Length: 295
Image (cartoon, rainbow, N blue to C red; front, side):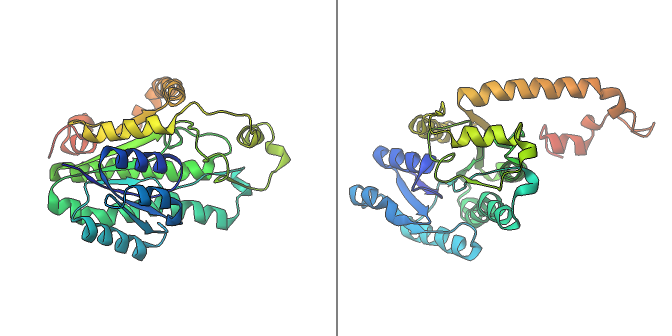
């Protein structure tokens, strides 16, 4: 039996590849985009499977209506994919308030609005799967991407906490964390802050790399789409799924450095407890936070 997918940002990039792959597979897709006319070719090819909707994910009322319309059209939603988003690059002090607000509204509030709108339907079904399209940048910090990565770190925190709330209700959640993919994320959809020469050796290097037309990302968006479809079909999907050899290689190095730093400073970390404190991880609260058991 085919699933119903609700996808934001479906007209370009990973969202477009995923939408096309799902339609070819026979799935039903409620595909949202700021300009749904860009989905016209797919709509003509799959008129019974594709339901396209105009949506700005920063408009909470519009999000609520789009989710309801999708359920009314197809009768249900099985998978929610929060893909809409964009990047901005520059020094942290150089971004305008407008750039920061736009980034946070789209990359963080948007997925939160969509997730919250879909949850009552998934909860009543006692089934469903949420894919949060985050980034390797939701796990590491990179010069030049402070505001973009702030939104992705926040999305990861929201999603990890949410996954523990919804697990007993039969709803699954996976955070998709791509590295660099050959989409227009670093091209037409990327915006930049005003350059400050003092940051040339850090932020400037990143800006030049993004603006270089010869740069090639490693990731294939069509292969990413297949991976996301496969993970939804898996009976035990992961909470985190890295996509791309660059994402895996970078995160391995970063995690090793974090572990080494924690071990180096462990005596200081442990020195701040009261003398009568027992092993926290064995406490009810410790087990609840780590998800090792229910209290």
